[in-house]
Length: 398
Image (cartoon, rainbow, N blue to C red; front, side, top):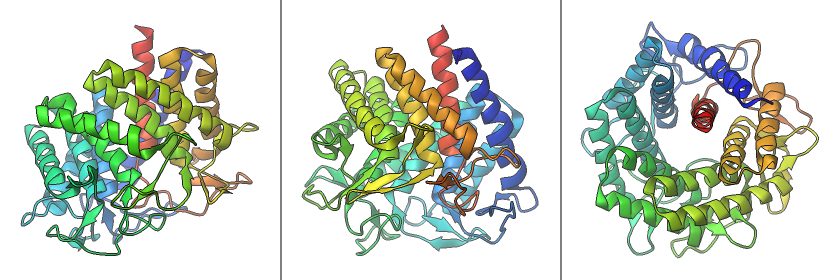
């Protein structure tokens, strides 16, 4: 496929299918908020809770999209998401943001999930880059200070997942049903890395620079399994690996996020290391996770058993991950894989009737019965894929 044709497809997908859906169907102009849930029949639920993940991802996506396509409706969506975060998610008494609020915007789940605080940093820094919103930049810096004070554990160099509203230890908490309670997780570290990378773009603080380098090295030394070339996902406080789960979507997403962090940091040695590791992890993903007959990326493997589902977000991350490798080493195989993954998305994941993407398809390529919008299903993975690909193709074409 011609690279400019590819760029045109991503522009159309971003503007006409993904973001148009969120502007017209997910934003509730009567109550000036976003619906927290829309079912498979396109029915919105105004009373449904709203997660911090959903609203911060909306903020990131529309801010990032505005930088490429400065449309007034994108600014309006970003402004609304920012208002909801600062007015209703922000904990005035203790600092930080709640995990979840009710449909009427009152607090619901007030724990401090550092995954969510990291996403808020990521979103606020993008908002600053789009609109020069100084308040958003200062909010991101404040959250970074909270993360370092409350989540970072100097005894083991890692970041804990969750504390109570007032930053006390509470046992038995986990991010989702897939996660193991009372552990450190790769996922939290990956999104702290992502957030700190974007923050360093706008705030060249020496302490932040050291923390970003530390995070990259944590991945290189503790989180990446150098025998299997997967991420280890769960750890105890001594970095002992717990469980046996391989997540193909996180693996391929992590390859490009680690390389990006090293590039933003500007350390040649780390750039070379992350490039080499990206290729090793990608090759494992190709060998174990890509189904050659149609190009889809499997969800995960647990205790040696493949979960034969194709969720929306690993497909999106595979497109970026393989394209990133093609940019690094110009091996045509990786470009072809990115195009193949995009073809799978077009054939099986995009909702061509109503817009946006389905949650995913099962091993028979039948649609999974999971809602179109929920606390985890935002315009972020698919929107970011389009934005990253448009930017990367533009840079490649210069």
